[in-house]
Image (cartoon, rainbow, N blue to C red; front, top):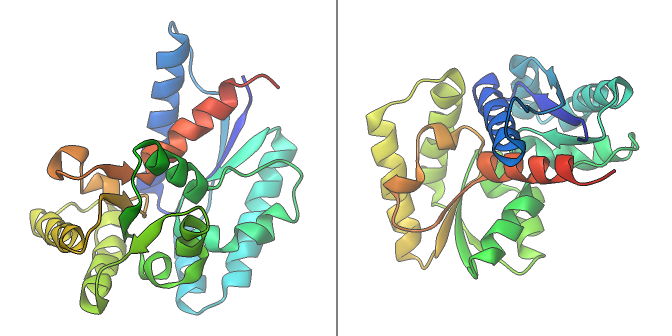
Length: 231
């Protein structure tokens, strides 16, 4: 089994879900008492969020590079960045390490294509929904991506940062997200990307009639596949 390096803490709530899913899926594949061979480096999200808010993405990139390098030196065979938004700085990390990073948007694109879906709605932080680093990665692989309107993006983002990263799950917020998803469906979305690793804490597959692509689940599954491939 390859050793998985996990850069977590963004937030620790979703990092805990990653850890659970990865170990659960390894056990499903191998049975018995098997669990994942992995190393977790959990950063302080307050620092990362401040860099985001101030537009100091290079500082965030340096912080995550240090985490990645530490995982590499500790024996990780590959790395997953347990967040969607911080893939904005993935090239800063990739340029300074020698082990591969499994990109969350690539794993998500593959899952969407397996469903023969062309047009998807994207939910996430404002950075993910509004900037190009994520959407363009999907579009370059042939997908059409639509996002909520301005006011909806503000509220979706607010719920992430003021509730979900703290593990605070509210029915009113769930209802709001479901209304946004319905609007995206009305605009032609054939599936919905939960493009923030905390959204899966709020929205479940059973809540939505469209196919839901929970990036946390998809990324964890991709990490397990890579871990079980021969070195």
